[in-house]
Structures are given as C-alpha cells and as structure tokens.
Length: 339
Image (cartoon, rainbow, N blue to C red; front, side, top):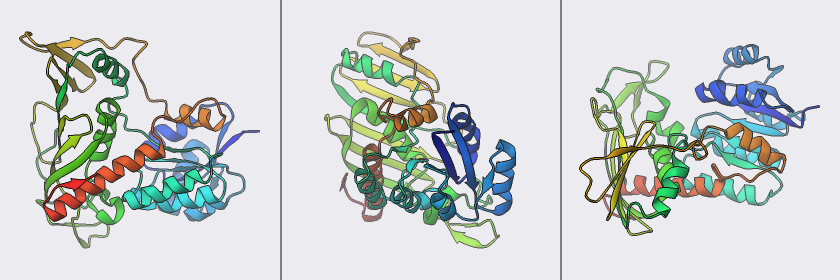
C-alpha cells in the first residue's frame, strides 16, 4: 500500500506538467483524487493521469480519509485556507508559490505548521537559479567578488497588449500583494546574498481596466512595471526590476557587483570577471554542483524522514512575503518601508 497518498487541490500548468507526473513516478506515492476549478476540468485531469477520484470542492479533498498529503496548486488566494485546513486534518502540505496573498496569511501558515512538527510543510521553490546556486554560493565564499556592493536584476517583458483579458496575476483578489515574478526572483537571490532590511518602490499600471473571463470589466490591481531599491543586511544595495512591458530588452539578467569582481547570471549561463579583465567570461557549472528540479522527491523524502526541507521552508516563504508586503506599502505610501 502507498505510504504517501495525495489529494490535489488545483491542477494548473505547473501541477500537471511537473507535480502530478513526478509524484506518480516515485515508488509508494499515489495520487488519490483531484479537484480543479470546475467539474469538467477535474475530470479531464483525472482521466489524463489515471487518478481514481474527483472532488466537488477543495474541502472534500482535505477531509478525504484516504489522503495524508495535500498538494495545493491553486492561485495564491486559496493557499492559506487550504494549508490551515490540511494541517488541522493532520496532513502534510506542499503548496505552490507564491506562498500566500500577504505576509499575514504566510505567518498564519507558519504558525500552524509549527504546532504540527510531525507534518511536512513546504513551498514550491523558485526554480530559475537552481542550476547555479551552489556554484554562485561557492564563488562568493571564495572571495571572487571581494565586498559585495550592489545587486541588479531585470527581466524581459513584451509589448503591451491592452486588449487582452485579465490574467489572474493582474487580479489582486486572486494574487494578493504578489507582483509579477518579484517574490520568485527575491527568493532566489536571497540564497546567495541574504535578506533585505528596507525597500523603496515605484510601480505603474498602464492598462487600468481589462475584461475578466466572463467578459465583465475589471480594474487591474497589480502593476505592470515595478522598480524596487532595497538595502541588504550585508550592506549592499539591491535594484530589482519586474516588468511586463520591457519589450526587446537585451540583457535579461542578474548581476552581482563587488569591489573585486562581477558575476552575471543570464538564462542558464553564468559569467564572471575580475578587476583588470576587459570583459566577462563564462564560468562552467561543475556537474557535482549543478542543481536541478527535485521538488517532489525532496518533499516525499522529507515525509519519510530521509531529509529536511530546504527549498523552500515556510520560514523562508514568510520572509519573501514580508518583502512583498513592504514593497506594496512603499508603492502605496511613496516612502521607505522596513521589511
């Protein structure tokens, strides 16, 4: 009999592309049931993956006595209530990022997890830098950068499409204070350079109103362009840009600038240069250091007591939600905010 029996709440793109098939590929793991946004979409997912049950609503998945794990693949607005209910039922939780709508919800989730130390609670980690994390951490520790002075990150957007329908990420009622991929990038950089202590942010919404899935007009509540300047605990300054409108931006990258060297992460390649160099050169990622996506196997191993959760703990998730809330307050108040 399977020792890990999963109820799936929310079966979006990442859940169907990765979580469900990769969990099903682990010995002793069974996906017992699934509930999605509609009965028809739940049935479609169940048939596709051979899942025996569908539920009418998420509470049924949590209450199902055949499950001992709940996988939350919904939009952020349900992460907190489903997590709290699952832990109260004595079930392990793997929730999709972003952790919650805001830091208040994230703290409630953390507090609930701490009252159930025998249960595993994990947030799906930021995947963008997993391949290079160990190498970057080593290079920094070896002194390649000297003193870290500044961190710069920006991402490529596209030409604005004011006629497209409202995406859930543009709807604050579903996504909360999360803006674009801000939390994902901050979580990744936090692994190398530590946490921010305060932030100053400016943001812009260019298309104020879009039609929702029913064709009804809906105010857009999430910025399409964001600039954050922050102080880091180590004394460096961070500039983080997130944007949906930076079309044809050539340098979609993360830079670490130090007193003795510079690192650049762009796509799946790492570059570096030291004082006196004329340009950056590629740094090879050693096979033994190259990270990869192993969320599902890590989660199951933690349930079985074989390893501890590192990517990502609820405590780390709370911090990036505190950063997210500080950014939201700074946008609203036009002032420096403490993280």
